[in-house]
Image 1 (cartoon, rainbow, N blue to C red):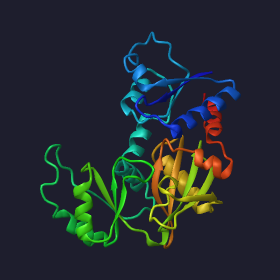
Image 2: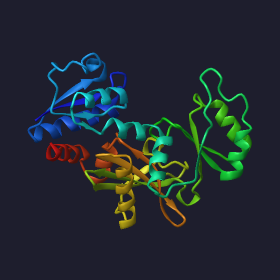
Image 3: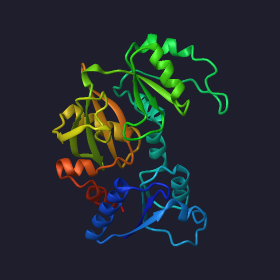
Length: 285
């Protein structure tokens, strides 16, 4: 069995190379030939049927158009281009989960505006504050590791945060006080929850480890497992990292990550997600 591990040419760093190494070792142990390919290396080849295409593509990037091009060539792509697109844009994730009736914080999208125009006034923010009340969460539609997530304590702070954002593609969410500084990451592979960890912070409303949070192994409830599996199905994910919040009446979905970094999960729980993913792909193939 021969596959491509597609990664982004423009992303570098230890957190990315560690995952690539884990995939390579897991593939080698399973007799799978896994070749690392950067997205810049195959852009010109996707439409040429004479190119020696692999048996599968493990798409560890967010280059959605490239993923779709590979699918058009008949290559199985994990995760699919549709899944990656839904998970990459938090607004699309919300809509997919909403369509399936899954519990989430109340959410409002920023109105669409045009490049070069931006928000010529921010009167709409008053209505968002009245609907969600303060504090409320401000998120950029595209972002990872909690870096593009802020908390607005007042209308003045909300106006300031929106004015400072480098993008107008935003969403605003109800702040879940019961989950301040804590959440749960569940790793789903092939319709199973294969690992989970509790993340917490004493200093930040976000629980992300990259943002300074801590982690420990976690045993999810049946409700939490079921919710994570339904979320993964809603976005069509073969594998995903699903983040849950602690709501006053039960678990709430926060995010679904199609390319969730899982090194922290392995350090915390001993579960090697790379092995689980390659076992799933081998069985599917």
